[in-house]
Amino acid sequence: MKVLIDTNILLDVILLREPHLKLSKRVLQCCLSLVDGYIAVHTFSNMFYILHETEDFSIEECRNVFNKFLYVFDVASLDKSDMIAAVNNEAFDDLEDAMQNEASVSSKIDFIVTRNCKDFEKSTVPAVTPEDFLTLVHADL
Image 1 (tube, one colour):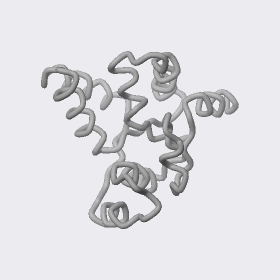
Image 2 (cartoon, helix red, strand yellow):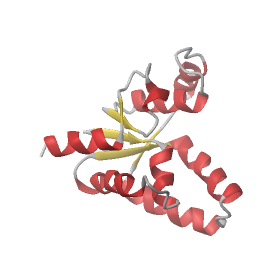
Image 3 (cartoon, helix red, strand yellow):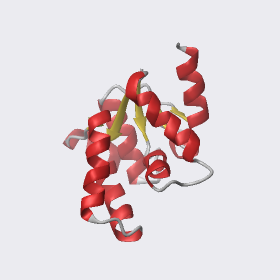
């Protein structure tokens, strides 16, 4: 199974955000051995902005976090045709969500794991909550 981990799940773990930390951490742990975890390439720049500009993480701290993620996760890329599809996808009101969708399609992702499933109601790739993802993974064991 291939899953794209949405930005909010990653930030839950980095920023120790309660009450989401426990489930988000379990999702990431599943990517160590049970599933193939992906992060969209643009998620790194989004997280850098959030961490460095609004959470006062140093550049070095950001690099350390990203290097840990790159050790565990594959990267779902976007090329020009993917970006054109994202920019023109009228099913999405948010470009970042459209980019998550297109990165998922291009990487043949099975599920997007997010706490914001409503943002992906019209996604080509089904979105699941951390709870639903954990149920799916354990059902496959």
